[in-house]
Image (cartoon, one colour):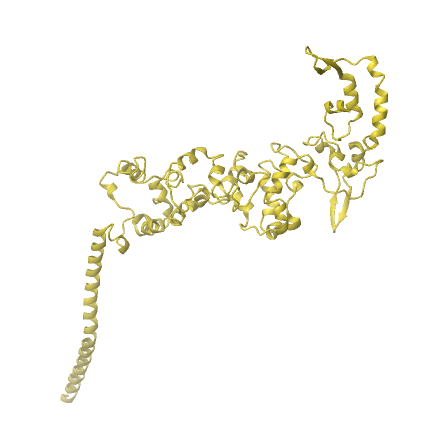
Length: 463
């Protein structure tokens, strides 16, 4: 029986008749130059063939199931009928298998009974209801990863029967390679596949308490979704590009591809040049050592609602986005000309934070490569103000007269205080003067009216 270990692998652990025939026809015992036993292939002789019937007889006696099992043709004799269906819990479930489709799938070389093992019975009848296919018997590695994912065993307690299994993503008898346009995991089809559970109102979405709503719809309207559906760019990011395939984890999990600590590397799969710039900027943990939370891609660009940075909607939110961390600078920005102009009609055209400081390559003003460094500031301003010069560039975009900036901008503070005092004093003086004049004005009015009545009465007596 030790010779059986060199037989070709088969779907059954028991050697088949074909395996024994192959062994008898192609293998013979020999020894190499030093006398070590080896197997060498040789042509099948007549003497070898006389043992083959006996070997076949022994095999058939040992494994009768191999001989009597249903073939694909047997299965298609029933399941090739488009009308074949069954009703379960009030739902009609089709049992039709399209042979023309199946023979082009990744499982085309597999027999039906290799997945539906309960159908491997004598005769042509199998149990009326077969157990779920155990994909893990062949796909052990993928299953091990899946079981540890947000879709795996851990989700059963929260989601129950709504936990997705292999067929929910890959289908059943129409499984194609992910590069095939017919595949449910082809880039153009994948968002629709995921939306079966993650769309707004889906039972799985409600049962599993998914925090973000309308993820599929948001994706379709994002820059990635438009690239996929409007431009047909199948290289654009889809669900699995960011969340991975079988190893999908919640963002709160440290090993998740969309965890804050890992999202930069995830985006780096496509945006290599941008990430290289970011890693040299003040926002990179490689440059700035701090206990405070540094921004990553999703803080500025969001996750499923990523829009084109040149669009009006995005530019109008830049100040607020930066203000999540740079609150004081945002306040001073909105106190200046640029900030106030940005709140008017057409404000998306005015200078925003990224126009002066850069976006992914933000550096301290002291750095020679910074856009606001004294050597570069004129060029930065010239993007909007073509006639910029060194004097023009002395404008202080965040300077304010507030008390908190008293030490930083004393001239502005004291000038503001003096002008405010002058205005308040002037209006106070004339306000008090007006208030004091009102009673006298009333008295003068009454006296004038009395004099007029007196003169009118005197004139009537003379007549």
